[in-house]
Image (cartoon, rainbow, N blue to C red):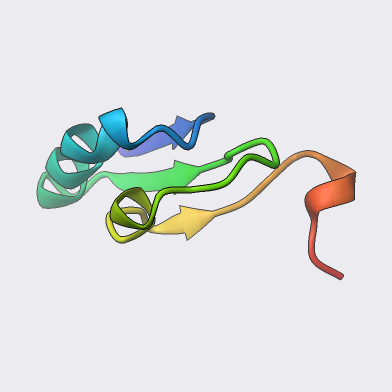
Length: 57
């Protein structure tokens, strides 16, 4: 596995994101417009969304 895409913003995924990055896996988060906990944001490689209303111009 080379890449994980998580569709959530729940900080329950912090341990998984930490482990993925330690293992060299690219970790991308799509919070679907929901707020992201800072402790989760700290352990992701990319932040993106597929929802047009939340994409930055």
